[in-house]
Image (cartoon, rainbow, N blue to C red; front, side, top):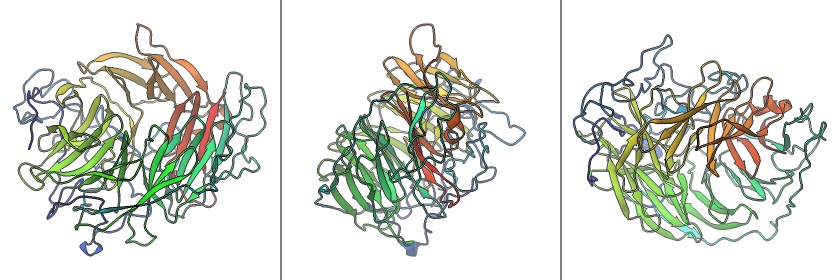
Length: 601
């Protein structure tokens, strides 16, 4: 096992929580080394298929507490903990139990339940339209364990000749006292009568709903609607078995809807520099179906590129659920215990990331500005721990390795460049947010007595490393939202060199404000809607002495209820337009469920 030099002070950031033998995020059982795409676990092993609906949140699970490990002991790098800013106990070390049981500590990402049918509005959120019950990270995965490897076959592919762009960029008129109802469509881009005039009664200064789309039919048990991608001319959304595309200005379809034979099961959250994505869909509809069909799609034209199938491989390393990520022109396909990289332009295999070292099984990948791998090592031994590696996205060569102590689990990457890691220790009821430098060395950890609340996704079989919204970073600063306690929250700017607070800004409304991105030296944030007001997009200067939010877009009041009804959502701010879409379809026949809305001036 490779250990980086120059160990940081003890008591710093950590790695995974302990997992019982046979459980956890990919801790191997009877591991065997292999590579390539992975098949689902052999049904004879007794692993049940994933539930049709997300499981209900468990009652009373242990939650990470404030700040740092609560009991003195070895730090995450095997050194004794020292008192001081990185030591234990400290001013932020423990959290007092509340009247309703132990609550998440500051910095703990708030997992979001994917809005299954029947979720009462308002549960888990101040906003009466957005029910988001908290779900303990890892509770749904403790009994799921998969190992092994497979091979991958690339087939030739080409665009369908009849899929030609028909989009025309429209010049959006300035807001007026009254606007004609927008054409909603039905999720397939057909259009039709507008049953809900979302721009009715639009006030002076408010933007408008440029267009919106209703969700396509989905099974009564619900279905996933993962991913949302926006280019300079088209907005693309996945929903159940479909991939739909709309003109960013007027919502007219830009290319024919792509309908896959089976449900979409994974997508690349990002896109390539030339606006391409990869979609995975199921091999069938039975309980034994695998998430093993891969297709490259051009977002601007709808043309299909190369395609491939995940073949069966070694036992336990499963393609029941695959994880797709992009790092430049490299597609990384993660399975439960390994991964395989491909040239996204051609489908040519580049390398396998397999078991290595002290029984280290790569169980999660994150791509973007760089390619990061997280491995679970030494399962069911005294040396059980997590490791982070940075990989060369073209060769798979390991640039550096950072090992964590037993008991710590890497849960999220709040940012890839700079690399900011959120980790938890269940036994010590603790969490940590730390920054690593370009060589994997320890740079800093957050040392602020605060309860932070980014919105983080929900995953059963894999760690969704980059599945958090409401957190942003630039080269020197991390921007985190605080929890809202009966009113407005704040965004705290954290110095990544020291882990200390630079400044903070309060939401301009009595609703939560979430960081979206940093552009042009300003932080872009989303202020969520309320009973009687639409959401807002604001900009906050990141430098200087004044950090007052300035409105960029005020969403119409008439659409506030719909805007707040997305229980599980994607949001994007692109070229002066704001997009919001659902990531989970309820499947309720009586509901006129919205798939996606676009706002602008």
